[in-house]
Image 1: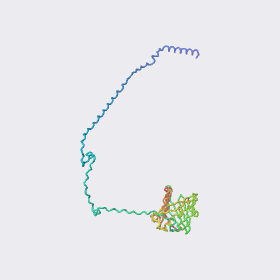
Image 2: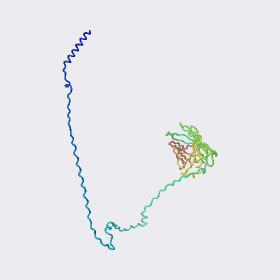
Image 3: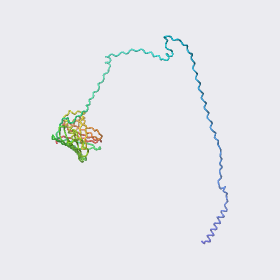
Image 4: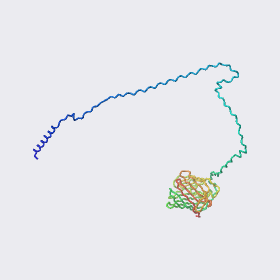
Amino acid sequence: MPLRALLLIGALVLIVHLLLLQALPSAPLAAIRPPMKAFTTRTVTLNAPPPKPEAAPKPAPPPKPNPPLRKPRPATQPAATAPPPLAAAATQPQAPAEPAASAPEPMPAASEAVANAKPEAPAPESAPVPPPREVPVGANVLAIPGSVRITYDMTGEVKRLSYSANAQLLWMQDGSNYDAILEVKAFLLGSASQMSSGQITAEGLAPLRFADKRRTEVAAHFERDKGKVTFSANTPDAPLLAGAQDRLSVIFQLVAMFAGEPDKYPPATTITLQIVGPRDAELWLFTVDGEETLNLAHGAMQAIKVSRNPRKEFDQKIEVWFAPSLGYLPVRLRITQANGDFVDQKLQEVAKP
């Protein structure tokens, strides 16, 4: 389209718009604005609350009347035997009349009292408890047992896991020297052993060496010429006391004591011995508990029970039963640890080595 035609069309459009704007009525601004609302104010006067009436003052209490005055009595001359004044007599209380003493009840005759008396029940007799009696070391008649081999059925528990094993106690002596060996073999648990060797003296057994072997061996050496015990585990030396035993020889030392003088060890008798282990030495107190009946592989058997009760937190409780019918050989041994683990050996067979 040519430029001239475009300019002509634009001019026509502009003229039309101007004509339309002039045709609209011009309204005043006041007609467009919304009417203003008038505000009315009012003053309200609040009346004050009426004052509370004051309480009437309490009337003063009337004065108490004065007591009437008494006229004084004329003074009279008292007679020589005149009674006390009436005022004093009125203030003193009169003592009540004492009741007549009643006649005492007659006492029953002695025969009547004896007839009515209830017989007293006799006190129950209790068995006397024998007091503890300490047996001195070195003042015993001993009977050293001959060589013997003892086998045991062993049961035990470790951390609530029960197991069974076979145990053998071998004792050999020639009158001057001895050897004792305890061997234990358990399925899946392996084997362990203890060995004691020493001399036989007038005071009984005199150990020279004690060894405990599980995975490795640790031993204690009795150096009697130096009066001490040394340990291969490099633990401190211990003084060697009279009558000292190790943890294996003590069994046969007790056998020799019971077999030598059976009547010397009634129930409640205590025996104190120094016991040497693989790493230390300490005093053990044994107590004779008395006779018990055991049900073993050979049937019922009477045995003397001896106990070593723990005195410290981690001490073992050791119980040994000695059978008089077998020369006081140990027919049962039970060791209980502080945590409840235990080993219980019961006699299976006694034979010559």
